[in-house]
Image (cartoon, rainbow, N blue to C red; front, side, top):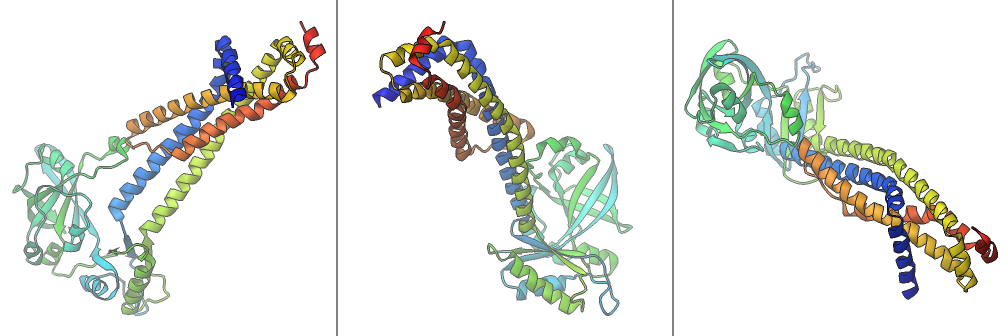
Length: 408
């Protein structure tokens, strides 16, 4: 242990006596390690942020889509509220079931002309909303069953239309399916806090979003609302495929379209897993590319160590003539190259983590530091020093004492 400490002290003395050269030697290692850590930390931050955001939006949810194809009876397949109730009652683990339908209309006021996206929603859909009510309330069961002309407006939409979110009780006049409607705003929904803050620059400021009870459709058109797609939220991990299979079987049996591929299932968690895997592959590829700079840095270490061996040939000869073993000389130079790269690695790790936090702060993500990647980078940087230091160290250790002493 004492001898190892002596090697370290000698190595640190030599590094200190050649500060400029040692710093330039470390630079390649610093750049390589910083690049790898920055990419991994930023990639993890993006991956976790995307995963959390998508989970909060879709959670344990599947969708069943009908694209209006005809079944064996020649009829178009569209879903009804009866289908939603049937699935909730007869398919295990289904907690909520709701359909999706959207129309658009124009709203004009003193602030300009806006495109209103009107989302028809059932009571189940209100239960799975990830964003809470900011002001006011949700519409009630009574309002839903009585086809009341009420709505919930999104927070940013309220600001665009009125310049404020204090709009509960305000009435909006518009047309739905060419029928004039006066919607009373009963609630303001908090805007979705997205991890993709950089994309908010491209938001359409002429668009507003309104949620209305889907029973309004029935009152306006005289027909029961139908859906081209329905969403099922289940309450147990790992049950998505089972829920999808059972729900699909019931719908295909009812609409006589088994095997026609008219209905399509989307399992959002499965798609999220695939997206995360793709992000992992991209991160690995970019890390491999960044690692090339570590190879270049290692070659730089080897070059400097060869120069150091040449400069200290006489010192090596004196030490060997005084009885220093070949292994001692070898370990001395290996220690020096390992310390150079380890110091470069530590500096690179600090710069990489700092850079990742800066990048993530700018684009709106939260950086995630991987302890395994930090430890791996430290070990790898020291390993680079050992690997590329072997040849110079061995060259020094194998010198003949007589030839070394003759060297000028």
